[in-house]
Amino acid sequence: MKKGFFITFEGNDGAGKTTIALACKERLEQAGIDVIYTREPGGSKIAEQIRNILLDPQNKEMDARTEAILYAAARRQHLMDIVAPALEQGKVVLCDRFLDSSLAYQGVGRDLGIEAIEQLNHFAIHNLMPDQTIFLSVNEEIANQRMHQRGELNRLDQEKDEFHRKVRQGYEILLKRDPKRIKKIDASRSIEEVSNDAMEVIQKIIYG
Ligand code: TYD
Image (cartoon, rainbow, N blue to C red):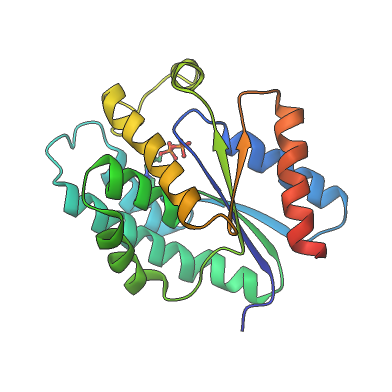
C-alpha cells in the first residue's frame, strides 16, 4: 500500500528540472522530511542500461515505437526498483520526468498520439500515478541556451527545434487535460524564485 507522496518534475530539455528538484530535496531534508530524488529514464541498474540505448547519439535509426516501448520499459523497472518501495516506506519521492515525458515527447513530439502512449504506459505503471506534477515552463530561447550550456547533447537533445516546439505544445495539452495534477511554473526566473513556487506546491500536497 502506498503511503508516501509521489511528485514528478516535467518540462522541455533545458527547463531546469534537475536543479529545481535537487533544490527542493535539500529544503525538504532541512525540514526533516524523508525524501529521495530519482530520475527517468534510468535511476536503477537495468533502467540505466535501457537509458544508455535510448540516449546514445549513435542510435539515430531508432524507430519511434521502439523508443516509446523502451521508455515504458525503463519506467516499469525504475518504478519497481526505486519508486514503489520508497512510497511504501512513506517517503516523498521527487522524480525527474515520468509518464508525461512520454506523452509529450513520444505522443506529441514523435506524433504517436497521446492516447496510444497512455495505453502503452498503462501496462507499465497501472495506477501508480504521481500525486502532483510540477511542469517547469521556459521559452525556446532560454531552453536552448541552458541546453547548450551543459555541453554534451544526447540523442533527443539533438532533435530539431521543431521537435522541441512540439514537445512544448504537448505539455500545454497535458496541462489542459489534467489541471488538478499538473501545476505549471514559470521556470525562466531565478533558481530561488522557481524553487519557492515548487516548494509551495509540494508543501500543499504533503501537509494538505
Ligand atoms: P536527460 O539527459 O535525463 O534530460 P533532462 O535532464 O532534460 O531530463 O535525458 C532524458 C531525455 O529523454 C530527454 O531528452 C527527454 C527524453 N524522454 C523522452 O523522450 N520520453 C520519456 O518518457 C522520458 C522519461 C524522457
